[in-house]
Amino acid sequence: MFTKSPYQIMRTYNTLLLDDCMFENPSRSTYTKWLARFYKEFNKAKRKYRDWDNDYINVDDVIDYDFCEIFTTRYFTYYEWARFENKLHNFQYKLTRYNEILDNRDIRLFYRFMECFLDRINDEKTELFELNSCDNCGINMADEYTVSAYGGDQIICEDCRDSDYYYHERSEQYVHNEDCDYSEYDDIEDFNEQYSHVKDGYTLDDIREETVVIEIPKTDRFITGVF
Image (spheres, helix red, strand yellow):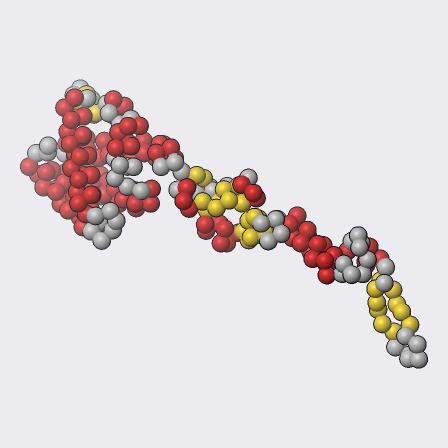
């Protein structure tokens, strides 16, 4: 796959990457199988689709939607992949920086191949993992972590639900904390319910207009009342 010097470098980086995944789900063996298969596909692409004149791999002939699906959803859930993807970006950065000194052609081919793969994953991620986008903050999330708001007109993430929304008991739905329509509706309805014994059909404004001063016989005191 690689000449002796870059091969040792890649082994070191692979070991560090796997050690970083040791205590995470899925198991270390899953990550090992993933890397082995990825290197296998890289070698196949290098032999079959390499442009020797310009020294690069025609990735469009290799990294398509099916390729991305094989290396994501067949191994990981969305959140497992997101965690592993961050590690791969870190792996990619270190390998690129190191090769600025080494200037090895095979390593350069590999990290360019990996970079194209990660870019394509980013483009296909929503469809691959059937993700939803939070209507409040825009973050992508798996379906099992979505929350319905405004009777299904909005889909929000759990963080936004906890910080920016509240459950509106009367309409039985989540609404935004700053939605004045719902807060005003609550105030008037709660007031009307509280004073429903006064006069049916009266609104908050009606009751305010009919607030009068009643004189209590045989005292010098006055009381504000409603009738």
